Image (cartoon, rainbow, N blue to C red; front, side, top):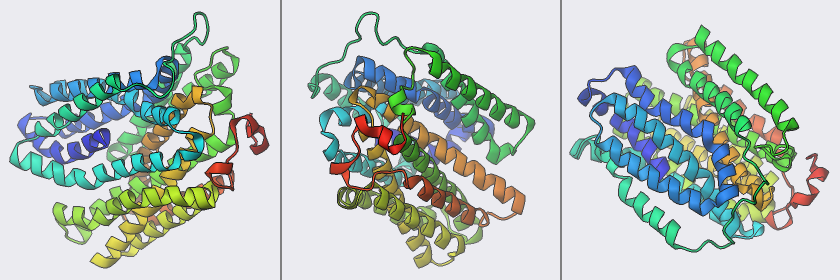
Length: 442
């Protein structure tokens, strides 16, 4: 929740930050871009560090560092300091996010992971719903620096708790000469993801320029070299029991598709509601509020449905609701229709996020839970920038924002094809790790 709230309130604070620090629009955008690139490029490696040294230890380091850097940003004297410290904050964010899933995997048996993951999703939903309001109040009453000081006390408390509370399992420590860290693989993955995210983030503003195409080619080339390296190295960053699992791959693909549809739609809807329907920022936030409420309340319901009806049916239902919400927003003009569209959007996204995340975490050994959590978080970082880039490209090509929404609904429905690879039965009967070969895994 602290991490999600940080990103949400920063969006509200950026215009004031720009004025007070005499920064350009591009510099202000980099306060978000540097953080996103640092997080996306390091999540999987951070997850591997958690598998090796203990998720609770990595979480404590990550959350304490996150809070300390937040305080530093609050005291920053220029936009250059803000940009640089946001990159450092992204490093600590990458350390703590996969660790949250790794700790859940260690604390709960696989058949009981659905509800803890649902509560984790609800916390993100609370941050998404409350962020604009909290950010608006803080910036108006105190100033933009307050949105960074907001993180300090919760981060300190969480870090101390993580250090004080005994972990449910034995503390991990690397055995001498075994399990070497795959630093070349980590560097190749970071290069590929950094180039991909940087390229996609720049598409809404610059379109597909020459530098953007080169960035995409570099990301692809680094990805191909990474695949070759992972097949040959003795201690791969992405273990075969994770990389070779069709079930895990399908769940990650679903997360990318769903988050692309969700955040691409939010990007388009914010312009449609304000430019076409004449709503001010406050009314826009209130119109979108049903989506945040549905996400908060829908996540625990999704955990119950997951246990009763299985991952495949729950995911398909969530994707259909998500697509239907996008289609309603593509034609909505009244308050009721807009609210109904956001309601379906939030409920569908919550169902998909809970179910697909539970599948990813459950269908890997406990020793690879950090890598699985890193991959899940990477999917949740790449998907939104892909969705926004898709929406911006279509809006430019067709000279209309709403025309992108049916395509985004189609992106959500593509996830239904991948959902066919998910387990049919509920959590209690999901495929154990040892029998992934039955589902087409390695």
